[in-house]
Length: 433
Ligand code: EPU
Image 1 (cartoon, rainbow, N blue to C red):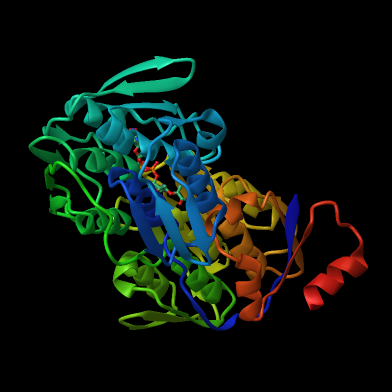
Image 2: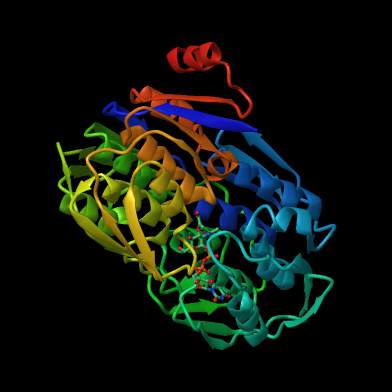
């Protein structure tokens, strides 16, 4: 296994382009199952989760060809209708095959995802929504076994706006008989991208980006003639901007879309950053000293839970007490204990963390619990004095393409070395390379 070695305290400068969004690419890759034939996607991020999704589709009988960020997928034939435990436990988004397989072949077996570091994360809403369309489920041996005849349109109200829950039911409804109305649907931009992709295959969907989706089922979908470009990753973009902010740097992210990050950019400005935007780029200039702030996570268009950890790292070096409230996941403060190891002052009670900014953080060995927690530790390390080692970086490989090289291009002293690499000369050489 590898670790990251980071020597902090250098302002980041320069520009880098945003990758395609992980959380749009995964459902869109899976949605190709709905339309038999050859699909082409562009701007697909090169991530461990992308490879896991392609491997899952391969097992289902759909081979793919990857050429950089372009992916070709052949979904002509479904040979197998199962998402096995070894893939689902690596990547919860595998559960998204449920809706498309039920709609296309009337049967699916999907390993029930267990809890994960950030919370219990049940899938009851996915199942209830699909049941409303006529599917029936049984649980046996840790697997959900779903069966359906032709799905029928229905009206369904989600108990809470769930991102992948909305995606699963939406994907099933596009091939159902009649009209489906989904109330309290999630409104994240990645769902809008998925919905527009489905429309490009022939689906009829209204209300994308609002909490009510109306879907007129069609009898078949076909691959689009042009490659579908995945929308930019707003969380990756936000992560680079916070890295600029905490180091007092000046970074421009290109090929992005500022309208996807309204809540995040407002918080960066409140923290004292200068934020400049064009329709496709965002520049963030960090101040001498950041200001304390209050961050409350909410479903889109509120402040995203996927940026909470990164802003907690920012609050650690801001002037005065900040408050961070996590409303989406019940256990998403695991990074706090690691930040304490770097000299942060954080008190967590229930879903609220009070962070009193310190003059500076100090490098330490830290361990990541999930993808965004890992990003927060990298940000803290970039701001800290001295050397930080971030362990368990396989989480980062799931969601950040080429993180080391891209931060190096902005002037960070960061290197990826083997977990067991203790030899100082080798580590120095990697940092200097
Ligand atoms: N929930 C239920 N029942 C359900 C579904 C959700 O109780 O059937 C609860 C969850 O436990 C949670 C809340 O509803 O408390 C919202 O969870 P949601 O279903 O929206 O999360 P998700 O679809 O599992 C996606 C992203 C996450 C992101 C969340 C919230 C993908 C592949 N994953 O997860 O991304 O944090 O939405 O925005 O789209 C990440 O990229 O690091 C990541 C974790």
